[in-house]
Length: 198
Image 1 (tube, one colour):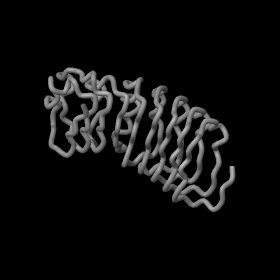
Image 2: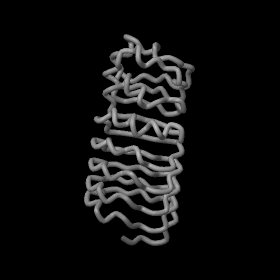
Image 3: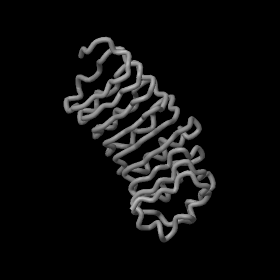
Image 4: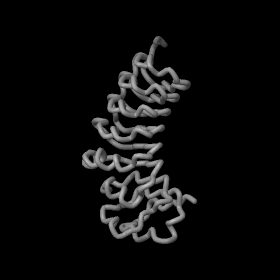
């Protein structure tokens, strides 16, 4: 069962009690959880998919205290939250899917601990440079669509990558794909490409 609770005014996690124990997915997008009392709640161990996007005051370290077995996580991120993400994401070692957006990210330097990750989405995140992916050796799908990327780079360690989405960027040429031996699909629509080479 998946539960949708977005666009409400939930302020405390008490809303998730015994009824919530059997949920496998929860959409808590666009709520204000700055006042969540994580410490007093039972862990929601059956939740494997959580949408926490649109919560600018959330601490990912606190989210980990309540949702401990996540495989899919949807987040937005502000620069203020950026400091918390490196510490918070390491508490989700089994995460398979991670999505950010829409948001604003200056530098991708918080993914080092996500060795199991298979799917990563940074759509509409105002990213200008692909970086910080070296440890994601199990990644199969990568989405950087709707950003400001001008060059394909830093993908050398992603030998398992099968799908790459780079539409709606500012790419002028195709390069940096030589080590992607399993790549089956690439989306380069709406870029500044004038020829196909590489």
